[in-house]
Image (tube, rainbow, N blue to C red; front, side, top):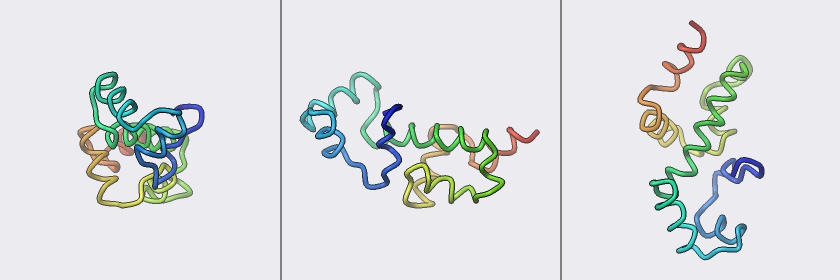
Amino acid sequence: MKSERPYLNPELNLSDLAEDLNMSRAQLSQVINTGFDMNFNDFVNSFRIDAFKDKLKKGEHKQLSLLGIAYDCGFNSKATFNRVFKKLTQTSPTQFLNTLQS
């Protein structure tokens, strides 16, 4: 996930990732569920949120909108991005950005 960054593909699904890893869907699902204590979507989205936060820390919000950065990180919907960001960080993207700037 970290080196090849498949999470940047907004169309990524469990079947595609399992195939890339030469595993069955069931095997990959079990690894994610038991090893990371989360479902596939939360697993992938956690990488996307980390990538988003890294881009903000690098100042990319000065060239792109927050939504543009979210799309670059693999999200394909503003609503999903905002919901997932809040779920995983307990703050909004704008609030997170403000903590970096203060």
